[in-house]
Amino acid sequence: MPVKALTWDVFDHFVNHAKHRSFEQSSEMGYLLEKRGYQVSPIGYVDHNDLVQVAAILYSTPVAGGLYSEIHYGPVFDDSKYLRPFLEGLKEFAKHNNTIELAVKPYDSYQNYDDNGNEISPQNQELLDIFEKAGYQFQGLTSGFKSSDWHYVKSLASLDSSKLLNSFSKKGKALVKKANTFGINIRQLKRDELNLFKEVTSSTSDRRDYDDKPLEYYEFLYDGFKDKAKFLVASLNFQDYLNHLITDQDKLKAKITKLENDLAKNPNSEKKRNQHREFCSQSETFDTRKAEAKDFIAKYGDKEVILAGSLFIQMPQETTYFFSGSYPEFNKFYAPALLQEYIMKDSIEKGILNYNLLGVEGTFDGSDGILRFKQNFNGYIERRPGSFNYYPKPLKHKFYQVLKTVLRRN
Image 1 (cartoon, one colour):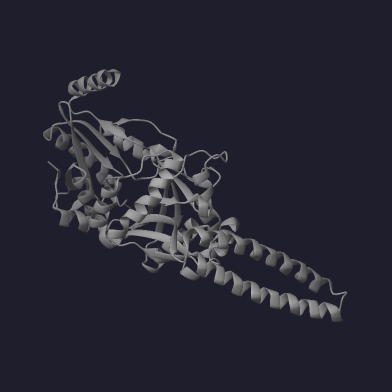
Image 2: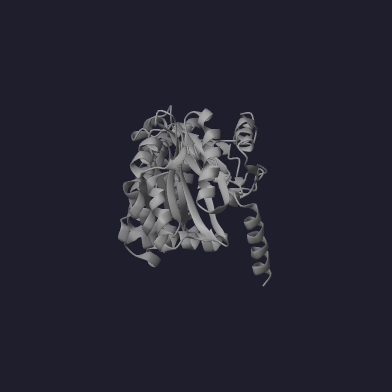
């Protein structure tokens, strides 16, 4: 049988050197899945020279009559000619493992779009044909954030850290520049601090009405991915922030005083009048920000306060923006934008050429607020094809579906 179980070492060697893959296809994710109670198998298609040409993590969970098995964002391969034999061998592998439903959800792109939803690549019909000829049922294209099939992606291949900011959209540049004026600190959490990350994500999930992961999940992920998982938080000491504002405003006032002296000598200088008007307006903004800082100090005192947090996972092929959260009370500090800039710079320095910001809705009418945020960083959209399913034991599967329907009714 060409598809067989692999050791984790053999699996890792293959996927770590592949051109394209998701972190979902890693031994670290295998560890996390096992901790969550799944049966996990690293498998691969091995050619007649005993070389692995396709690899994937197959994870399974018991259902009535057998197993539900899935390959999520896989399999991993460099040469598509091996995909069909892998899929055909996978069917036999699934049968031997008492699987009644097998779902394969490729990481390959079905079609790419620009920021505005305009097609920039043809549909990947070849991929659909390979799966269907191998005997899998295409479940259809999906939309919506929960489908997880629409990803916002940015290439870092032609960038260095000094040019990163210029690659953002006009709005994104302004956002990050302003955020960098507040004195925000970014640091990586240790394992015993993951409760701080959980507090941020829990607050965000309550506000946006989605299910957050339990703290145990983040601990398992931290243990499995180790230094490849970056639990980052952006924080601010509001007393330091106030001191920073006072210093900057004093510098601005010195410029205003100099302009006033110049205007006294040359009152007809249009340029200096415009500068004076602009600097006075900026000084008023400082007054507003100082008043806000004093309110925050009254509430939080002289301590470092977390504004936002994000979890990023770094693999040789790409960095993934996995989970995040922020407190709306601190929205005007734009901390999430700084976290994005930080991880992109870190990825560039590590030679990671692709950055996946993950899900968007797949609608481009302006209603997707998550898309609007990600558009600040000037990427493009990759649409995944969704799921291809195979039913090794169709009668058992039908029975299982009927049983689920009955249980839901009751």
